[in-house]
Image (cartoon, rainbow, N blue to C red; front, side, top):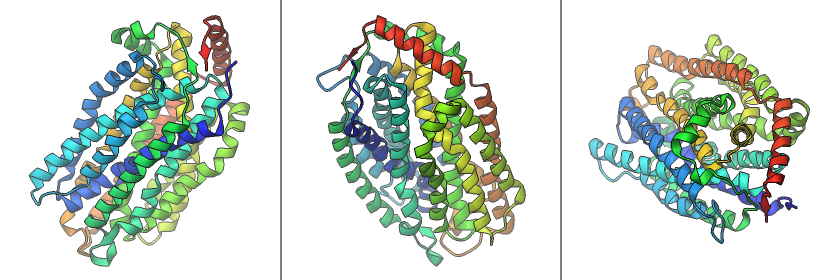
Length: 462
């Protein structure tokens, strides 16, 4: 009989995404501002680098998934070793991305491009096996749901730099409202050292318990893709994961400019980040209760409806520069709504992997997870349009830190691109969530039948 997961296992799983997000949140929020205001790069060039990195992921992510899937379990497990193999070099690369070694814009552009793409590759080496860990740590649906929540907790705590950076790093220039290059570098060094230590601890805490014998290792790439393209649940959930990442990263990026230039108060971005994560913290104790009563799909549909309405109000009200608190209040409702999907996205990812097994008879968790992860990186590519949109609004990086205003028309345009794009993304996500076929009844039936199937196949647990 399979043992229940221990507190140590949950802590170890939480810590991995805690470490992941320490650097990732800085990449997603501050890389664009660093490139424009410190390195002098244009928004179009930055967007191009980010999109090229995501195009490479189209090859890199699925390839890593198939490699991990075919790896035979060693004495330390099948997926667990990747925590160290990917995590340690990932930490170093994160520092190199934010290391300015020249005054040449061309050289700095090449430097950022090389190490940002390397960072993305190493992130894949770590992330794909890490996501697959949940399926080999436990077969129990409630424990997987808790693991998903733990992962969201880890990711949320890992966003700590986004709370601190507006105060610590945004301290240069006129009025102390500009990025400080030296402080940014040393902050990344501290983050990298912390990541290495956290990965080492998490590695000791995680155990792989479920060893499922299946034919996945002999399944070809084309066969896996054929199964996925026929699976409505997998396609819709992958698109939801893509747009969730897009709206979160896009908002984090453009809000840095919005608070710095439109509201003229970078420190308020810390308040914004607090209210962004506070709803999820409050909801965490109640999520499993709500899932048991209503189902994952059902609560996500309701939440996305709230986010769509609140986001639309933020756009049409055209909140004035002197009314930042109204902007913050509406952000609370936006994040209350999206909080359900954010907390459950990894449990729902496990559900669509289970659904693939349910409809095809094959279990290919690493390959399936790699494709789901790739779709989230497509979301990053969509968010990579943020610096280009900021440039289209007329943002002039030469005015950064000088105390000179960007101009009324530019600021108005920045507000529009910061608020309209999320409205569109939330609306599309709401439609997709409604179309998602795995409602409460179907999910319960699927897991019940898979439990019988696994028992008949003599699934080995340790």
